[in-house]
Length: 79
Image (cartoon, rainbow, N blue to C red; front, side, top):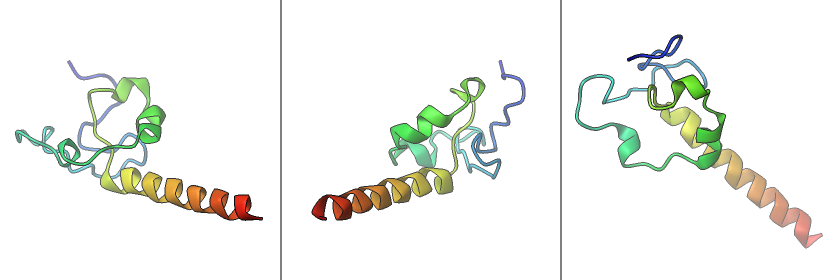
């Protein structure tokens, strides 16, 4: 059963196409082989859990943000 207000073809974080293979009746999805950061999963609305994938851009931007924050923290530690 589909949960209200959740489009399985759209990223629940940004609303863009998530290119979900499972939603497109395929056996796999891109997210099966690429880890989704825990911080991204924690931002998902409860109603999207198990219904819609995040898009690669949201998953990857979180990774980039985490790397940048780590680099900034390292610079500050050196001061």
